[in-house]
Length: 402
Ligand code: NAP
Ligand code: MG
Image (cartoon, rainbow, N blue to C red):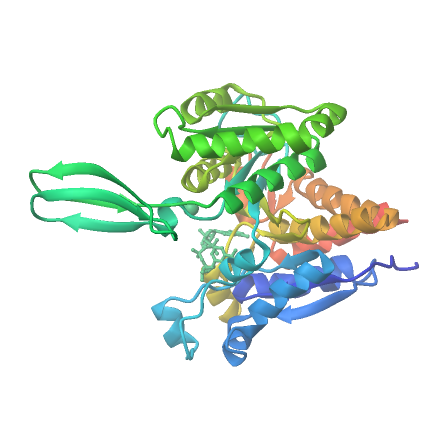
């Protein structure tokens, strides 16, 4: 069989159990069918340390050049990891580094299979959470106050003009927080969401608390509305999809009553909380895709879960683990499909579709990893090791590729 040809994508290898799965997925599911054309960056922690983390920056820049990247889960070092890996420094999260270079929004979508029923009975289609990944409470300055006094908000413009307001005259101790966001970041967030909705051909919902936060959240609402009016309204009409703004509490109620099948854009904190709620209610992080989309059209695909450290330690002791490779397989299929779409490479798009279809077909035939078996409703499933599960997907895929 002739292998499918493709243009370059950026491949970012990672750590621990997902690094093991990464290689197996490439060897078993990709290389037999596709002449994989990747620019390889090893973001495994030892190599990040060797390069003083330059490799993470290089990988981010490479995504800007090729527009599509696929990333394996990586360790974000903490004090324990610094010791474990004898690191020169506590390097920053590669995801954070790449996000800063690409300036994007993270979209997370559950992968549905027939035997795992969402906890919310009305949900029939996936709900994608679009999380603004910049600013707000994540970049806030906070004080713990232990005595009475006056708290003020002060802004000094570059030209010397000042704005000042009393926040509260404290008669006792308390807490104080100052947070911010930037027009440029909110604008990129909006464009990423509108572009993603057009790509997915799904409605876009956006929610904030603008009735209470009359300057801060109101600005988010107005920037979205303005960009929609000027740049996207016609495109949405043509695509037959809608943009819909509502208050966050109204959105929550509507989401629970909905059938799914739309994108829900959330501010940073709302997105953090709501994505865990949505992913748990749909099944698990191991069945969740994640893609970072930048406003100028760069795409980075990854799994939503981490490096599955506990399984890796058991793997090192010789155990054949039953770690779920689906999210990592879908990171690859997502990247290959996007490469195909950007280049008009129909065979590559078709391969990505078949790879996903084969993966889900194996699960729906009752063969799966342990995490899914625990949630499975219906006849008793067969629990496979990761290797056996990937082999079964390969057999299924082969039959589609004839
Ligand atoms: P994790 O790797 O997502 O794993 C947490 C637990 O969730 C696992 O112990 C396992 O539960 C279950 N799980 C997650 N993915 C699974 C899969 N594919 N198949 C089966 N079970 C799965 O999170 P963590 O243990 O908190 O973090 C481990 C490392 O990953 C950390 O160093 C962290 O920095 C890194 N991390 C990276 C990313 C990223 O690169 N995007 C994201 C998050 C975390 P059981 O043990 O009960 O089977
Ligand atoms: Mg969170």
